[in-house]
Image (cartoon, rainbow, N blue to C red; front, side, top):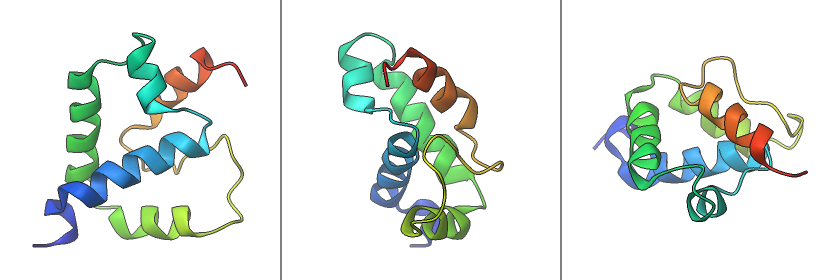
Length: 88
């Protein structure tokens, strides 16, 4: 199974990208700002993205500033929307 088919990998990449923005996806669902279906769609978008290796490198590095996601992230818009709802 390739990286794009690995559901667990994309689950953790999605959560990791959210964490970079200070977003706790579990809390977002609990607060009603994100549905389980929305979260599943985010993971699907991540699985369909060809930038997996870049995301892995991005999340493994310590230099990218919090509050940013890579330009290629297919969940960038929703993650930034959720970030705007989060009290920092």
